[in-house]
Length: 314
Image (cartoon, rainbow, N blue to C red; front, side, top):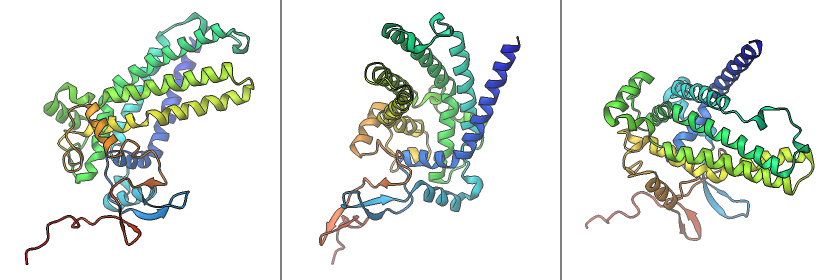
């Protein structure tokens, strides 16, 4: 009984820490979502790559946050925070409940991993990853409605809209306009992103740590490195998921000319790949401009908006 009380106390402490961290870093996440949606209000500047070649770059995410503050004030930098916190709390509780309900006797006992055979380690790895996969799936399914609301609240900045004024108001609007399926826009790419990153990172770490690396301290770095690599590989699906959460919502950010009306997440992925938008928001400081450029008298330049317009009649 005392053990259960201590476990609940640790759970709520974890929730409080997550809420604090998410609140503190929300302006960065807010700017990142807008970048993922393709909204770039700041003019690119010319610089050079590490190889000395001229290229255009967008200002850093901190300049982006400064722009948001100039338009909406300090409080405006926290647009979408309430549904985001709700999504994090719901996902945390769902993850814990599901993982605690799945029991493996091999995982529940105290063991020294170094004393296990390769076969036993592999079995332990598969069981642990399967249990975590179930927990993450439940967490995403439970939190997706709040995630969609949070992304749409942030996307309102693009068109200076005030459609989703609160969580309950947003629930009513989404249900009235799109039905139940509206709460799960972008669900599939989000699930694929999370589960693929989980299995890819853990599988690579398991193989390297058991067949290539023997140093115990080095194994920790391998695990962290593989998780980072897996997140980078699956990052485009995160961009697709957030775009699908907004596409067709009626918001300016999810309608032409800002964004096409996608027929599905695969259509969204193909379009973003075509316009080189799958890595939007992956870099916070050096954000490469991927739009059209021209060479004028040997100097790299950006085409003006009236460059291709028809000449005036004389």
